[in-house]
Image (cartoon, rainbow, N blue to C red):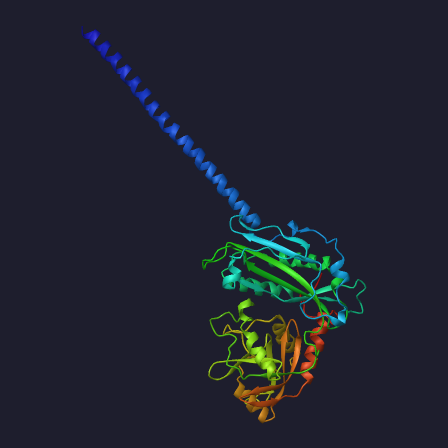
Length: 433
């Protein structure tokens, strides 16, 4: 009886253990049956995330290797263009344009395209039309005038500075994609210039103006960072910016308007900086002046002239040395001009006088003129390059300035010689297209 009981107990224990094992296995199977789909979903999500990251990485930057080119078959634009002597700045457009789209849903920058110049199709709700979400650049392609140039090279002047400034402008406007690869966009622009090579006029004073532009195309009336952009580049053959050529201009500082101020957008090339200046310029023209000399603050600090940077060459009252003065970039209300930077670097390399970035005031300029220490003055920018200044109206009085001064002429001669390949400039200044 005891043996039977023991045997029965053992069998029962074995059955119980077996049931427990089965139950455990069932639980494990049940857990696994739940975990496998979860793992599959997790893996799918990871793969999806990786694909998105790969797509974003691939499309994040502008890639010149993805550039496509569609050449125009219409000769009408080229055959109807005016002779170079009759070119007016910014009116005649060349055959082709470069476009690159940025789209949040598509992961960033798309493939760049060169196609025949055409009108844009844009939503009436595009935020660029309502909130000024637009910025641009100005640069030039020159036909080399070098005596050693057998291939008639085309040259870009310091395009890396234009790209850096465009990125800064985009960032200031909260535009996404401002971290594009500058070298890649420059390569695309080089291809555009090659496509319109026959549009580049020859001769000093003539060039192909290149206008990169970024506009927000996001169709949204709310005030927010755009989710879609269009970067496009158009070109235009141009002659001298001013009809008078390299002749002096007269300025007025007597205006109630202010171009820029610290904390604003004066250091960016955005459209909103230029539209409000037109009224002041028109009023100046009515009084017989070419441009406005922009002032800021109670001390009448000088900032810019028209749409150019400004330089004064004078004898410093404290040091007695000759000094080339231009307003500094530190306050954030001065555009970091490419021509400005080039003049500062070029004249400093001569080592013949002091080159200072500080804030001149109109009272200082008036005093220097009265004491015979104001030697000359000029404006500087991509469009006009260098423009001599022969007079400034301030508080109803016209200050006369010698023009064209020797320094102004020398700066013009050396800078344009570098731009046209007649003189070798510092490394990287001239980029062969």
